[in-house]
Length: 396
Ligand SMILES: Nc1nc2c(ncn2[C@@H]2O[C@H](COP(=O)(O)OP(=O)(O)OP(=O)(O)O)[C@@H](O)[C@H]2O)c(=O)[nH]1
Image: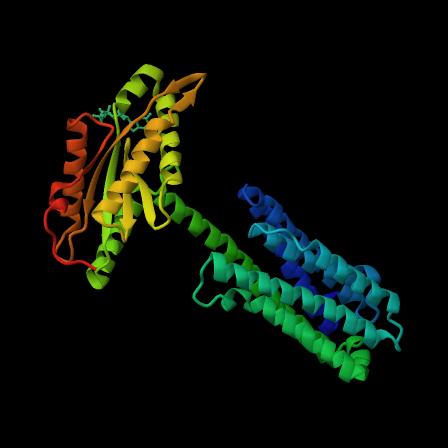
């Protein structure tokens, strides 16, 4: 059959084959990756509908049937809906409805020779609008959520699709005769169009894969920086923040302080009520601490029942005030469990960065020493490191 096929038929069937293969690939992906299944199923629909369109067009490009043209448009809508769902946004229902109406108008205009250029112009306008709109979605996502240095990169293939169809709209308007003759024939316009589409769909699938990989990388990064029980930053993330803060403070002489918080007699909660209740208490404490945290501060679960707070720009007395507020908040809001109120309290050691010559390890030793003093003095209290209170080198 292929031996007798025209160049246009072969080119169109090639696009259909690629889209068919990717429909299967995304179908397998949808079942392999349980999350985002709905979004990925939209990409299956896009690939499958697009494959269907190109198979029908390969056989009837002289008089493209209504159903194939419509399927082509719905395919691109499915692509955009899938992308929107994947990035956690609502699909653009109203815009799609408007574009569908324009597409139906194109079909109503009909493909008789005198109306074919107008129909083509309307059809290509719908397709190019969909591609431009999707490019904008991808650009925003790359810029705001993925924080790509060059966000336009992610949108390039779709932008290219918008431009390719946009140029066809212009052509249908300024040179309707060529549309009429070339689209209906085994022409270079059709073959080039199909080849461009091969590049377009391959780069579109690559774009979708970048989206999937970027999400997995972000998720892994998030998991590696957060504590599984409380959702707070973990020790590693806090150490990174502190290292960066020391660098900034050495460079810009920015003040900062750290707080070490340790729950009092936490072992008793575990012993008396069981480990699961101990876990609930840790979550309760984490949410109270997070609630009372100034916006410029970072909070981490450092290990076990110990938490660390980095207070940027805070003086020793400001840090002590924040610590006192947190202590009070915890002491006054016990954990409610099965009708019982479990009292919780925390001891807090505070130490301030003493300027350029200070070391993080020393700062931690001071905060730990202050925490130890808080425990020794009877718990449920805040102690400011003695060295912090001693005369300090000048600080901005
Ligand atoms: N439920 C639960 N308990 C934990 C977790 N991590 C550490 N612990 C418990 O925290 C308790 C800490 O006990 P200790 O270090 O003796 O301290 P404490 O009882 O709080 O006494 P002080 O710190 O001296 O006031 C131990 O019983 C640990 O098993 C956790 O993730 N979940």
